[in-house]
Amino acid sequence: MNHLMQQIQFRALGGLCQIDLISQSGDCPIVQIVKNEVDRIEKKYSRFIPNSVVGMINHNAGSEWVECDEETLGLIQ
Image (tube, rainbow, N blue to C red):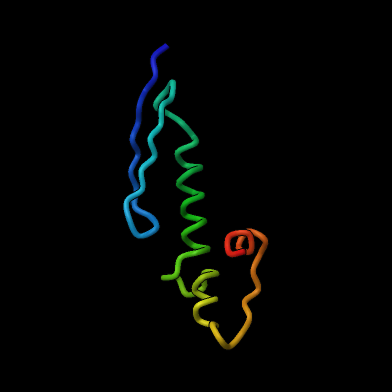
């Protein structure tokens, strides 16, 4: 059984990301799943996006509370 080694690079999170993958075929849905998750994390937590959780925390620092979901609380506790 042959295995195919792939290196998939894309830009996210302020830099270059790379997925190293060994699969039995060139078509592997996990690549898009990983890219989608990285995109979700970037949109939710980037300090450069004003309406992200981190953007709102920074904007409201010292003046207002920012309600956080369980995922965010798990990261900052």
